[in-house]
Amino acid sequence: MSTVFKALSDPTRRKVLQLLQQGPIGAGELAEMFDVSKPTMSAHFAVLVNAGLIDAEKEGRNITYRLKLSVLEEALLAFAQTFGLQVTRPEDGHPTTTSKQETP
Image (tube, rainbow, N blue to C red; front, side, top):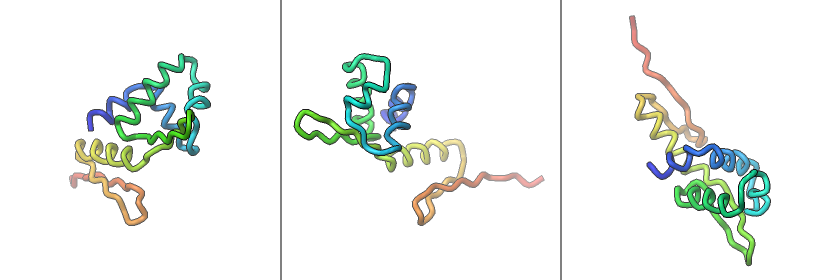
């Protein structure tokens, strides 16, 4: 779980996850969207892959990255539950949140 939160701690990696919500993107195309070197972006991709947040599909010399939303959902659910939020996943697969309300 800590690898997921480490991966989410960096704004560049969070932006990568946002971009991948639109669908799979090639590594080169994705790297061009940032004002950093390709080796730096490769390091960011490696952290995200290691955390299980994205998948890398290699075809020849090209790598395509794809978001793995289920891992992110699990991490966020666990995080919310540590704060006492009763978060459940209904049958449609989308999380819902209920908070404990105190009665006066």
